Amino acid sequence: MLFLAVTLGFFVENQREHYIEHKRERQFIISMIKELEADTAQLHRIMRDSVRIAGLSNLMDSIYTADGKDINVREVYYLVLKNAMGVNFMDFSRNTLSQLKNAGNMRLIRNRKIVDSFNKMDNLITLMERQQNNVLAAIFNSQEYSTMIFNAKYFREDGQRKPPEKIREDKLPPLLMTRDPMILTTYANKINIQWGRLSLYHLSLKRYDAFTSQLISYLEKEYHLE
Image (cartoon, rainbow, N blue to C red; front, side, top):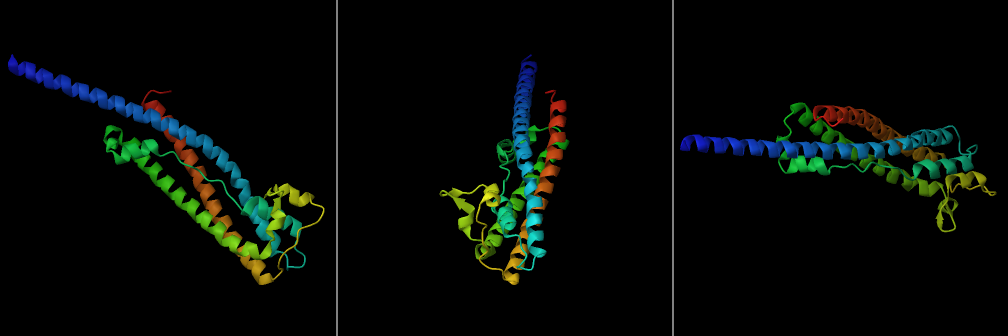
């Protein structure tokens, strides 16, 4: 009887531990879904910034097709202010993923396919954060030449950054600080690098959006959260 009681006690304790672990697993999944949904909403806002890619392309073309004399100065100023001086980036939610990976909680996820998906998601986020840094580096690099071509006073109004559309509306057109073809072409080349890196970043965002959309659906189905 004593042996049976001890065995039963171990069984009950083991079942209790399994119940607690399964409950924690479910809590992690619910938390992950909430973060993915928040990221998805943010991502869709960021992806609207892809219009900046076309703007950078137009800026390059405006410089490449001009010889320094026929350049549309007002339009180039507008394109620089609207597209080349900033960018919108994702701020990924990694709280749940960090808890799973850093505290050894990934063992609670019984489905290997889900574990692999979380690892893939982690790699995708790391890639996009690296791409963000590359885009920022390209912006800073192009701005070194921008200051030799464009007078920043035309970008400001009443102590603040001027809305790009105002460039087109101002009575007096802005002036270039130089029309040196070498400097203009070098600047356009740097914008080309910025355009390429931003294009790759937004391509990664689209892929991540498709991946997380499928992952959310799969998690909801597997854990009966639909």
